[in-house]
Length: 90
Image 1: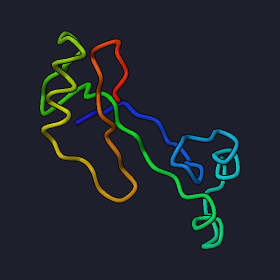
Image 2: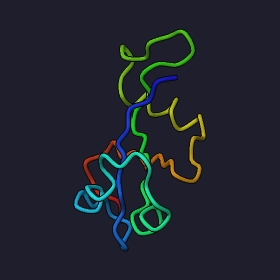
Image 3: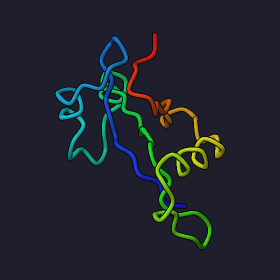
């Protein structure tokens, strides 16, 4: 399986913060203090390839359906909700 996503560091409100992420960049062996102070998550938003098949010919909405079925959520990995309408949720 090949997925597309982004590594993010979240601020205290749960929003991605590139400034925080910069503290973790190019650090191959972070200290326990740095891991606690600047936790990161891999946010997955697309499924590109599964088993022996490229999914790139499928519309994004269909790839997201397939991605959501994989149940990849676990500590350090997040699959955010996908909104296909231009209206923002409540």
